[in-house]
Image 1 (cartoon, rainbow, N blue to C red):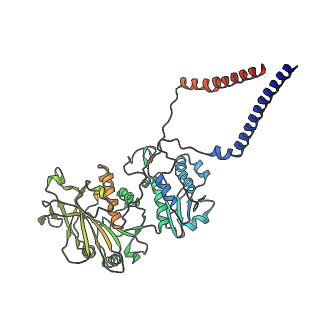
Image 2: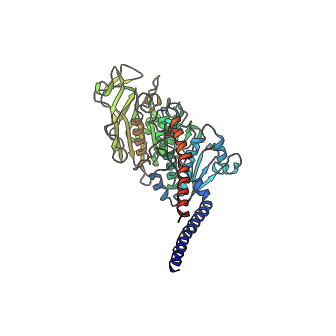
Image 3: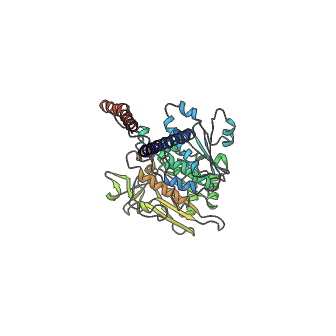
Length: 495
């Protein structure tokens, strides 16, 4: 009797043990199921960036910028999800760019994302562009902090979103995109105060960015500038929001009134970039020179020929190959000291001696002392000497104003699309970025984030491998689970 009771006790303990285990298992399964149902939306909607270059993830540099923002920032995405989905051509690209915006909001509670359908919400579009000066389009991104507003166009036809070192004729999927750098840079600009604005002067036959100088525009744009065009003779003034003025390859001289307005702008601490090319038939630039002479500089209607074979292209004395030799590089361009540029038919720049005081000038590129400047008006007139090709100058006109800074180049081919197409684009764009950064009195260069390609690595699966995978996961794995369950059931049944 005692032995039977003992056996029954053992059996009851086993039943209790197995029953308790089953009960615990049921409770765990139910708990997991409940939490899975409750969190299914978040879990199922969670996305993981498995691409090699992490094209859907923001970098640590962006995260550092976001975490330091202490002002309210609103990001307007001018396209809703339906618009993105319906765009079969560029939808994937827009999704990638917009993913950055979603990430931006995760790292700072002061950043808000507003998704706008331009057709259904024209009122918001009007608020963002009251005077129609920004030219907002569908799929654009607008950053707004206080009164500061900056638009970023992420159209694949916009060359500014691509790294200049990429093959510009390649398939967009294979080119490096710098869209994160542009977006994060825009955030820095609108939250740090004012967005710098560069006015390109027109009315004198100047060249334009979009036709021949897209690399130049990209170099300046990397520093955060907005762009606008200004005809001084019509406007009769230089706008108060002008951070910098650009004169790109003018074909005629300034009018006296224009030279006066430009001179007044510079005396108040204005920043100007003068970029000249030879003009045929030859013309003089007395009104331009009236501005330049304030910095002990003048431009002449003569072309430079380099006689030193180390500084020219073989059989082409008018095509200069010059290394960077000086200039205020320590703050923004200390790594450019070994770089060289090609210049074609550069004009003569003269550095005047001691006409004005409180001036600091520097020649970044200059010829050898064997170079000849030959007059365009009279080929028999020439002089020999060392001639600066790119110069910068700074002058303090008024003690109450910041120093005025200017830059002058005797040629624009070094940064033109036609020249860069046959040389390394990295060198001229890097030099130009450093030059403009110095003129803008920026000690720190713009944020640089490595570009990313949209192409993704694909896993190729042969038919045989697909069949093996099917057998393993559809037949073998379920069979193992069933057999294991039967074995466990049988062992428990016989205990």
